[in-house]
Structure formats: structure tokens, C-alpha cells
Length: 87
Image (cartoon, rainbow, N blue to C red; front, side):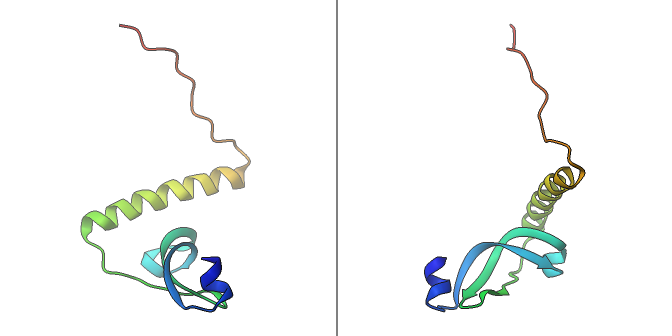
């Protein structure tokens, strides 16, 4: 990624990029294909997704948004502790 940026390669890479309507999401960073060049992420590439892939992306977006919400609210994301299972 650094090489693509430093050499202005205009290379297609998977990147965590800020979405502003791409893939139907706004104001969220998600892993998507993007062209990386001398200006950083120069273009997000939207590829056709199947219904199953869209559902997986939606689950991922929901998880990312939950972490963002926790950070904004100042509430730590701590899973409840469970003891060893018996039986």
C-alpha cells in the first residue's frame, strides 16, 4: 500500500476507506476495493455483490458501527465473563 502511494501506482487494493454513499453506507470506514495512488485512496471501486455478499457486508457494517458507537459513547466494549462450562 505504501509503495502504491509513494510511486503513484494507481493500484487496486483492499483498503479500509471512508464511505460516503458507496455500497449504500455513509460516514463509515469499511474494507473495500480502492485505487491507491499519490493522493492516497483516489477512488473506491464498487463491485456487484450477490444477495449473500450484501448480507455479509451489512453484518460487517453493523459490527463496525457498533464499535464506533461504543467509542463515541465512551463505553468500553467488554464481553461478559463466563466461567468454565460444566458437564
